[in-house]
Image 1 (cartoon, rainbow, N blue to C red):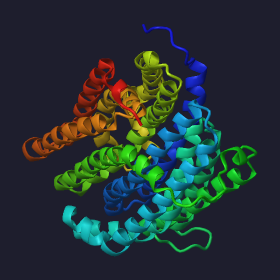
Image 2: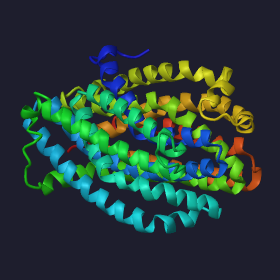
Image 3: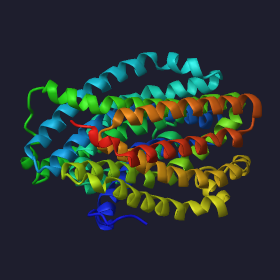
Image 4: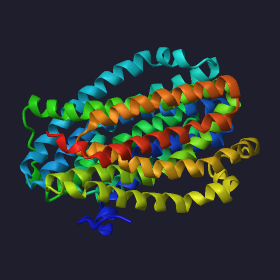
Length: 445
């Protein structure tokens, strides 16, 4: 099926499994918040979380995207066994992330309502979105610092800490959602605002966990993680050169996702509530591909650092088949037991029945996601990030135009969600062609 390569299945899975768990880290909060709001019986809040959660996730993943440049540099230095450069790269990545977080904090805290007002027509949904965002943004500094830690340990290939951190994040968020959304155990009943507060506090706890691990980790001295260097603008410029196209890719992709939900709002509150619950399922079945995609960037970057460029395409293909198999097996539930999958998210029978056709189609979407994510992230790992940006922009334009057409002329939720299949197929095609062309070998940094 593919040529012999030096990267074993064991090595791929050893790096990927923690990152699969870690992929839940920045998605699990939105999914958990939606799950508890779905159980609250408030359709307006459920519709609102379907809009504001992707909106905030867009901000979070922009921070993640800016950290990916640092991750690529760290992986390259690890491949070359240049240990002392690791700490300096990580520290300068953190400096920039905190500046970025400060900018987003001001924008979202004081202008979040006005930004959402551009896209949200229903006043009740808009108020609910504002309530969630007001508390949620308080965790942004710790969230962005945590993304720096994820990039550091991903680049090092020492990803087990990401598993422990994600478990703690999930447990804390579930507990706080439970008591703050519903008002149990003497806590105030805050509804969607409680979900925002729970998520912010969870990020504080998660970053504190990262710091504790790094402090006691015997390898921290090798990397000089706690030796605070002066700001190295050259290092930051290199990271920005790598990260800016990734951030633009992330911004374009996630803004398209946000527009997707804002256009669905035009189909009515009920259709938006249905899409909010389907989004949770979408996230859950996609995390294995996203984790393997992040691992692909690290593995490919390390291969290039070891001068094994001839193994890049076939290693990527090897990872792609792992991704498809790992994604397809659990996704069979979407085909054969969609109603039981939906019961995990909501007990609203009308929403469950309306979601069944969407979930069956989602099975085929997930297979495409499992394939394209790997090839796309391989391009990121090679450093040919501007190419990835071009692919993303072209595909996003087609994607948005397709959604707009379906909302305007088909007025049917199933046709609107078919846009995910269109997006995945186009990115898979473009990414595979470029990676196979070997033009990425001309990229240097």
